[in-house]
Figure 1 (cartoon, helix red, strand yellow):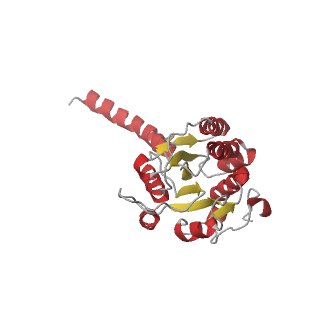
Figure 2 (cartoon, one colour; figure 1 turned 90 degrees about the vertical axis):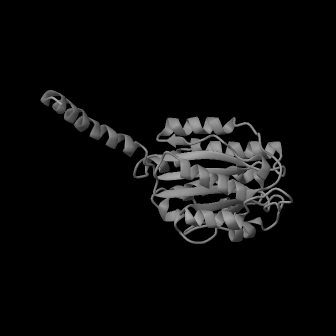
Figure 3 (spheres, one colour; figure 1 turned 90 degrees about the horizontal axis):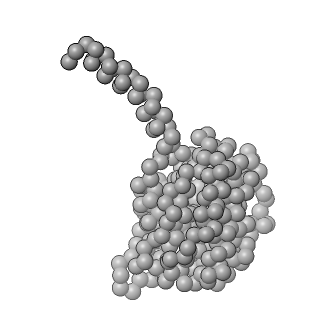
Length: 256
């Protein structure tokens, strides 16, 4: 190897170091968040639309955009994952990097028009397991990993096909250090929040909330999302059993 070639190679390697460092830095986000949404047969088409519209409205809101901008890295990774019957698998947008208002608006538009391709039973454990696989495979690193489960029913009991149920899914989440929070929609199952509290909520600081009407899903989801984006709120122990409208508003920089 000539001295000129050696110098050229050393120079190229030296110049590549900052680029590689910047590329690695771009993969760090503050939160990896999977929105695991119920599309089982108990969710009618108009209710499905309310779920998507509620998620979309939250990401369009100034409050949520401000919370994302206030994160240390000013960006989060979000994926919509739709679950229903175990045999149908899960449907997902894939990961979306939210690093500003434009990206949040783009996600909101994508979610609002997302087609419904899933139905059948209420395989919550399968939905959580699919969410965990997404988090493990994501091309992002994050100090906080959260699965946000919303649904209106109890987990279905499998008849023939093998299925990951919530007890196993919770063990998987704990092993992966992933928080699982829940939003129980109590329009069909009274006290569903109690079942979510005992069977869905997983990990330190995990919580569940409820709404008794699907028409209030947007308010409930936004309140829940804002709590998840505030570390001092999301790490607070306990279960919120009140309707979101009855809770105190979440203020940027406030833990209550």
